[in-house]
Image (cartoon, rainbow, N blue to C red; front, side, top):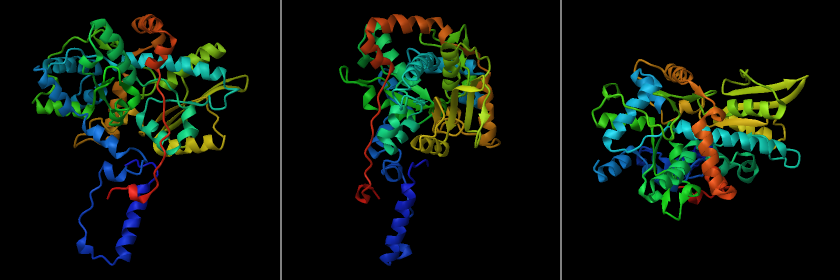
Length: 429
């Protein structure tokens, strides 16, 4: 689908040429079937080993664990015609009836990620003169983009990418670190599942960087998509509309009373929005109430600029989809990127349009469904990470007790350039 270097096309052309040269009869060929092992074995996006990890993380795996124990949100809200908060409360009841003990909200860990991203940006901005690759800081919450960067642009692009963990992996630190210590249990005794709008999040959870070798466990054991949650409901013969409305867990949850809180900005986490406002205030003493976006080549490439007395102080961009990402990378390589920060997402329209989200109904187009999901997301009451007391208190108390180096490990990650194997012998047919 999004093969980074279009090598699949080249491989198929070579196959046709081989068939032509060998005078092989058209009748001797079977219908071609392309799997992850085939079209992605070129390392354009994902390796065959990683595709195995994807099959190990599914709603069937979650069911298996729950049975052994005997015992995202806007996409589902659009499907059932409910509010995000109501979906969250009903989904909490459904999961707990299956045997899940705690249901947390990734909005909480997203606040952690936003706070740390703000701090990282200010640190990078302060050293931009001596370090030419300190800026632009490129957002790192999208694993599809990270996989592409590591496997196609390697050492050139990686220094630009923010090392702050994504909300999913920030929650991994919180659950297998803080929560485990509070409960007095080994991280290995906790089975941690996240619900995400994107299949690439399964790959992110499987990265060696997020494996706790001391306890022989991953920080996130299993990732299921919004679509897989719907499959779980269907396999249990349950409609979410009929599930009893429960109470939202307050620990690690971005809630106010029984209302689920969101984050201002795009449906991809609001990184541009929050970092821009924070940087404007901290660096230039400018309070920004509303951001004015300027659409560039298309709706998935937008800019926000802070000017004072005719001088550009900050220039941020939101770049979604691989075509726009490739244009951004080429600008960086030519030294012509004017940006200080870029919110990068692999999917056109960002995370709300993730591949793991629910599909439109028969009487609905993709565009109509995406618009409905976006309206539900914007309808959520936004929270401000700096003003979120539970987040701020935990951010200070827990991390300060860890020490600077350990805290950095819990909040940040690293990237690895993947050497590309261009040998045709490495491709499985």
